Length: 352
Ligand SMILES: Cc1cc2nc3c(=O)[nH]c(=O)nc-3n(C[C@H](O)[C@H](O)[C@H](O)COP(=O)(O)O)c2cc1C
Image (cartoon, rainbow, N blue to C red):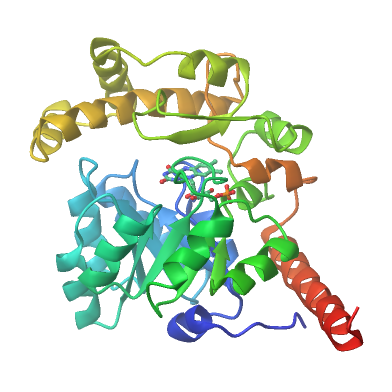
C-alpha cells in the first residue's frame, strides 16, 4: 500500500493523497478526472468549453467512475460559466474551483450543502482577495506553470501566500514528481496540482504526438507571453507556439477566429456575445482572444498539429520521461516523496 501524507487539504476533503489534477480545458475530462480521484487524489473537471448539459453529463460520468471526492473548475469571467456553476451546485459537487472573478455567491451556495470552494490565484493580491471572500483553500500558481502562472516562481510565491493565511494551499507549477511534492510541502503547501504530468498520462486525451513532444522537450523549451490570450501564458516552444506569440493578435483577427471557434463548437453566438458583453468591454475583448486561442489549442491537443496549433505546457515537461497510467504516477510520486523524506531525515539526524 502507498504510504500517505496527511495535510490540511487531505483532511478537509477526505482524500488519501495530497495530489490534484487541475482544471485543463479539453484535457481534464471525466476519464482523467475520475482516474485521479479513484487513485486517491482530487480530479478537477475543466468546464470552460462545456455547455450546462455537457457539464451535467460529465459530472454523472465521473460519478460512474468513482464515488470519491472530485471537483469542477470554472473561469467565472468566461461566457456560460455561471450556468455551469449552477449545474455543479445543483449536483452538489464536493469541490468548486473558481478563478477570474468574485465568487462570494458560489461560496454561500456551496457551503449550504457542505461543498468546498477553492480559488486559483497567481499573485499575493488575488490571494488576499480570495482569502477575504471566505474560500476554503487556494491553488497558488507559480511562474513555472503551464498556461496562466504568475510572474513569481513557486519557490517564493508559496511561502509568501503561506505567510498570509492558514488555509490549505495547493501548489501548482513545476511539480511532476515526489521531489516536487516534498519541496512544496516544505514551502508551506498542503498538496500539489500537476497539470503537465497528468496531461502526459495514459488516461489523458492529448494526442500521442503531443505526449511524445512533452517527453522529448527539455524544461527550457517553453514560451511565456501575453500574446496568446492577453494574459501572461506559458506554451510549448514549437513552430506554432513561436508564430502565435511573436506579436499580439489584432482585435479583428481575434474576433474572427473566436467566431470560427464558436461555430465549429456549435456554440450559440448571440448568447455568447451577450454573456461576454455583460462583463464589460475589456472582458468581452479578452473573451474574443480566449475564443481565438481555443482553435489553436485544439489543433495541438487533439490533432497533434504543432505547425498551426499551440500547446499549453509547463517547464515541468523537462521532468516527464514517459506516458504512465494515473495510478502509476500517483504511486511513484508518493513513493519518491517518502524516500526523499527518509534521506533528509537521515541527513538531519547524522548532522551531515
Ligand atoms: C495541457 C494543459 C492544459 C491546460 N489548460 C488550462 C486551462 O484551460 N485553463 C487554465 O487556467 N489552466 C490550464 N492549464 C494550467 C493548469 O491548470 C495548471 O495551472 C498547470 O498545469 C500547473 O503547472 P504544471 O503544468 O507545471 O503542473 C493547463 C495545463 C496544461 C498542461
